[in-house]
Length: 137
Image 1 (cartoon, rainbow, N blue to C red):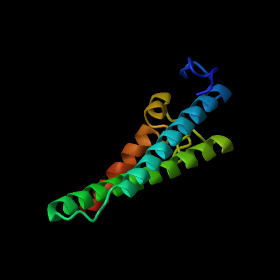
Image 2: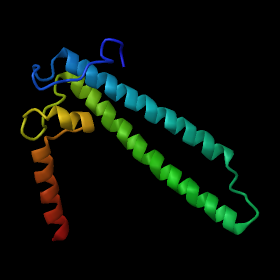
Image 3: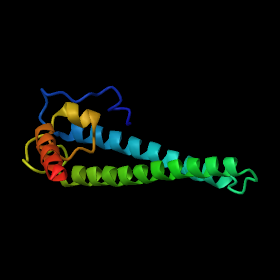
Image 4: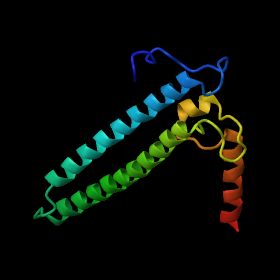
């Protein structure tokens, strides 16, 4: 995070998604992306170091299970990086922080908790209720 934004926290009293808020969330997203990429590099190194040719069947099964878990986690991280990139693009386009359904501002609290959010809490809840209804059919 840049030195200017290090002690900054967006507030409701400011104009929504002003330049400082955009910079704050851009920095937050970029830092998150760097952390995920670093974890991914560590995962790749770890997977390359482990030997799947263990002579004991139980050891081999355990290693394969661990590897599968690591790869699933890595896949989730890859998808998350894609969502971070999409959020960064929305900042560039001036669309960040606004619900893609209603066009209303997404609360700063929600963006702090989930900076990749594309919907307001209300729109997200409606979306999840509809999804649940269709899944139950």
